[in-house]
Length: 75
Length: 195
Image (cartoon, rainbow over all chains, first blue to last red; front, side):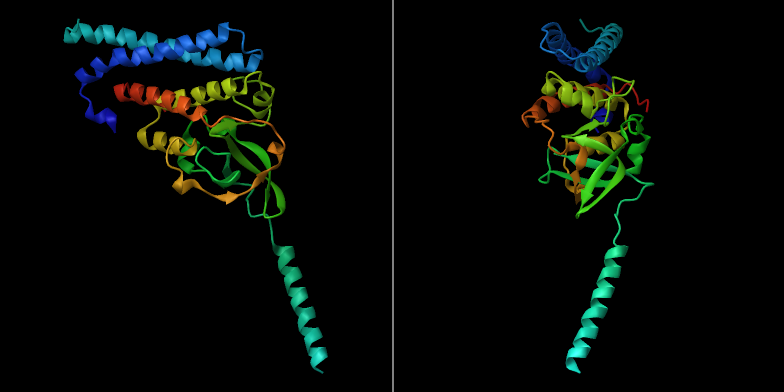
């Protein structure tokens, strides 16, 4: 599997790309929620749950990246 | 004499076949859990059923989606305990107290079925981030996101879904696959498995 092949340094270099991808999803779902195209509560709740997941992942990956960038001296 | 013999043979044959018919039972067991693939992304049949993979029952989301469904198989009608996957999305029959569990009732009543389906699939896929590789690959097969060869089963009809208008545009699969790539990228970072 891909996990085993990547060394820690390469993993860190991939982080900004992943965060960017997550952020695009986050913005799209936020836009859908604010646009009022969804009128029923069940769909809204599902979207909110997904946004919450993306928020947590973005924050934790950003923190991890900052920490690792410091260790590997990435600017 | 010949007529009598023929009569006797036909009567005996009729009795035997009627006995066989009586013994012909609904082949699905009450104590087993099945997976119903309804309009599966990679399937040709409308719906079919197979036994659930035992390994998948250890996925924490698995039991939340097990529900009782009425199915028709070879003109026999009966109920089975199963996870129903509608175009890959697990659905319970009715809305429960937990809104996070995708269900047929909410999908039907959604003002945007496509968005409900998409948000539901994202919700399921995000849980896969923490699965080990074997379970992850099995889940992808079950959800119709990889090869389906080894999970095809018996063709059935699902009574609860008859005459329902749940049309999902097949092009949605591309959007789901894009989200799956994102999940795979997160997994490639490998923070560890928690399931």
